[in-house]
Image (tube, rainbow, N blue to C red; front, side, top):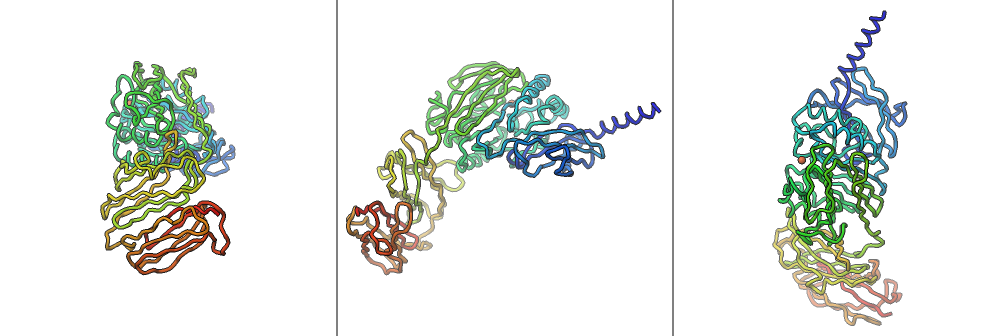
Length: 581
Ligand SMILES: [Fe+2]
């Protein structure tokens, strides 16, 4: 009888070994709650997972999606959007054998503007140190992790990957990690192991008021730059955090690895106010002084931040166990320590706190970036139009209000170009100077006379405030068509009203070179229509229209600023009038 029990026990152990699941790790196709995916290595042929928010596993039992691993199979299960700040209970089954209950803590709600994450990397080579590091960071409670590359010494060595999973098991099986590939492991096994957003090589995700951008510092620099610029220019997130393996600013070995991309990648960081740039590759801790190459290529700027004259915070958190490098100094070095380390970030609305720790959990460095609360937008547009007039492109816009507005800049680029060509600026053109602070509406215009027929241009309108902060106002594309394709009058003109300011009436004059549909509309500074002065088809010639300061019902309007929008075909122009009442 005893020998029977022993035999059964041995069979159970054998089955468990045969079908055991290991390498459990967590990724996401999107943000930490939407797209959350658990992956595990298994030799089983049809693994399943059951899960729920209690040990009843009330959400059900599901099949894992099987794919080939570097030795056997890797299973993935992508959860539907999961509850925030909750414990997921789950068990995995391989060919009839279920694991015991396992748990995973989900992140805070992704709309929370108060959250935390940990960044670090370079766990290759010394597995004991990696295990120490992994167990230390597993004691922290954060919403997610960024892994900065160089997971293993050899990305093609299955033994290296096995050791990495085994030594990091406690951390890896309980934390969501967004990875970037390093020079040591980037390749097919790396790309197969982790579930990440987008193409898994470079991608972005959002959490709270922050945008996270993962780049790959191994290949495809130009393609990534194009994508990066678009990501940065179209986000409305307050914090912009970029991570990739090889850093731009390092001392000692690898100091120049990314120099070739300063004019593209780093310029995009400076142009678009990236707050934090995270890297590994160099096995030490380094915090940079504020870096802004648009201001200086050889000295730090005054402070961290995303305004035009402020600088990026670059952190190298490059040692979860890889052999340590010697420290050094350079103009960009604020702190440089030869120690295993991890960096923990706490974002709380307008404040970002970075604490760096060694693997004993002792604080080794600390920095805080504050952003002023944006009480109100510096410039609010109530109207914007772009139109082709003869062989020029004309931009018209009206500001409903301006706060400490120095003026405007206009930039242009052709389709497919990365960089913006400065066309005009308040610095050289008085017509583009802002009004400072005002709540009175003001019309502005810019005419681009240097355009080619058939070309598609993208224009960017920005304002600059007294502190030098650049505000993106509008980005719009237009294709220049040939004369025979245009519908607009050859050279319609409208004159400024006279008198202006006026009481009781003012006269608006315009000229049509050919028959056109003409609309003359008066509206107030809120953009609300007050009076339609004209709306019909007119023959070529000169016209005068009078407005006596009344609305559509004949009631006198209140004293203030009004605009008259003139539309003839596709030609548009808006002029400002001041009614004295
Ligand atoms: Fe590296």
